[in-house]
Structures are given as C-alpha cells and as structure tokens.
Image (cartoon, rainbow, N blue to C red; front, side, top):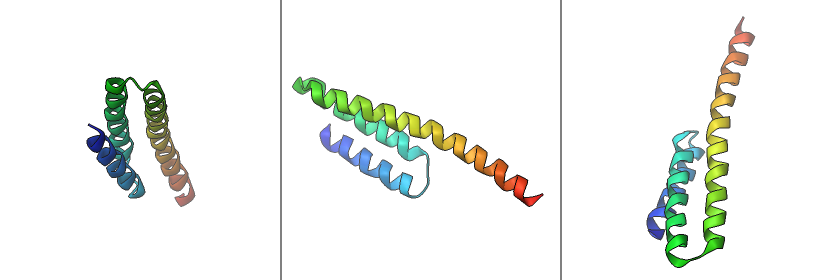
Length: 80
C-alpha cells in the first residue's frame, strides 16, 4: 500500500505541475493509502499528517477551481 500511495502522490504532483486539477485528487488518494498503512501499523502520527495532507489537497482542489473561474472573468473583462 505504501508504494501505491507514494506513486499516486508523485503522479499527482506531476499532474499539478502540468496545471491539471486531477493531481489533487491523486494526491488525496495517495494520502488515503498512507492513512491505511499508518492504521495497520498503529502510527497515529502518520495518520494525522496524511489526513492533514488530504485536507490541504482538497482545499487546493476547491480553490484552484475558483481561481480558474475568476481568471476567466478577468480575462473576458480585459477583452471588452
């Protein structure tokens, strides 16, 4: 599960680098894998940090959308 989680996080970062929102979803899935690893090992610290990473990725996923919408409106306003 750890290798899968790491691969998803790296793939997510790659996607974000290409300005693709789905990278955040991949990062959330990867962190979910690491939460599972942490739970199986009884590592509360690992569970806590990965849950926080999920929250940050979800926040960024939602904010990215708002920025895209606002940028489009601004760009349209400049064209007029």
